[in-house]
Length: 179
Length: 325
Image (cartoon, rainbow over all chains, first blue to last red; front, side, top):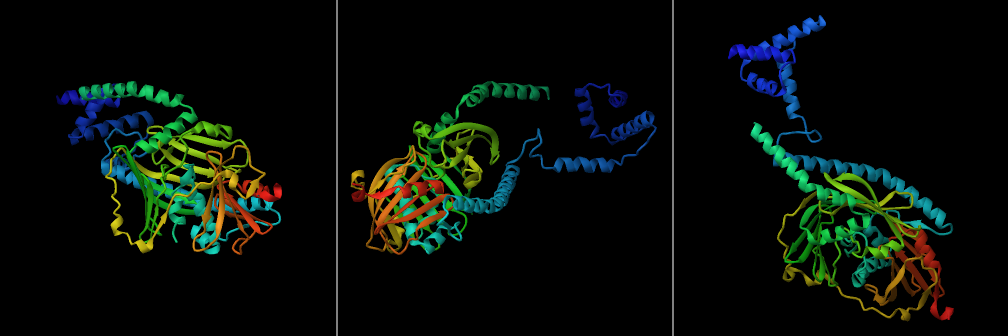
């Protein structure tokens, strides 16, 4: 049995072992420290013969790398292992945060862009009169600065119920509707 | 080990075999068919998730819950940021409750359209003014989506983009863009759960303080011929939908309100006696533009989620009916 394992280790080092058997061997070696050491020794000898260069690889180093790979976020990597529900939740939260961050950053740059574009458009479209609300972002601001426009806006959105016609982002009703 | 691999192989093979027609079908679907399925999916599926809304340059986040029980829809929006509020849409009414102030708004007019995205089921009407094209496939909230562009045929309306899930046809992201392609408004899911049937929330009206409640009732439609003004400039594709007379809040002032629509974009025309409140000219709030002008002792305001050019064009074409006749 031991002879057979030694032979397989040797074949493995020489790349002569079929994949299935190689995987089986590596699985088996995990439980036998002496075979593991033998494998490292053979590998070192092979390296030295092939390249005239011998590098002693610290086994602990390999284990550390192995552990780090295991702990690595495998989100974008093909992975066989089953991802647990908690892990999925963490990924979803991370993805959500990333998307929110992108939208915030995008929004900040685009809002500047928007303002410039909007002002340019207004300047082009309307040479004599044309004005944006100082803070056009807020419906409450609109309500404060010009209640009639606010009423118009509310009636515009509300009126669409009557005809059953579409209007954008019904959710805005929530912020527009507060008295 | 061999047995496990064999089973995995069989499972993968079966999955690919059964998925093939579905995937092939999706590949064969045109933009209009995708949008049609989207409107159906929004009404019929149970789903809940988190929405990020970038509206009028203001970023907000809301939880959306959509439940269908025995064919009855209930849709809830829950604000995650101040002002804290909850909006519930169910058959016959929309209730909006403000947590901070205990104010309640109950809209008794039937609302069949989704909070998520209001899109007509009859898309054929839109072909007159918009071109639908399929774009690339992208991930939104970790789900694969098909981008659909809705491009206006002229510059009197905005361009829109919708990212529709290829798995369930729900819209996962939506943008309104100006003529340069810059998003004016956008809504996107950051996470979405589908197929989980949540219990519908029971709204208990008895707990609501009536003194802090405002009811909105159905408006009375008037014949279009009764309007006091004439619209001489209406961009192609927009049609008069209805006319009504509104009483402004806290004032004894009546305003004529005419609604125009091309099936997707809507424009309101308000006509009233000259007041002190309004300044003439163009105003903008996000994607919504207003244009006000005076005509003798009257004032007209045209507003809607359309480019500034459109409201200005319509407003400049308004004349008084008796003057025209």
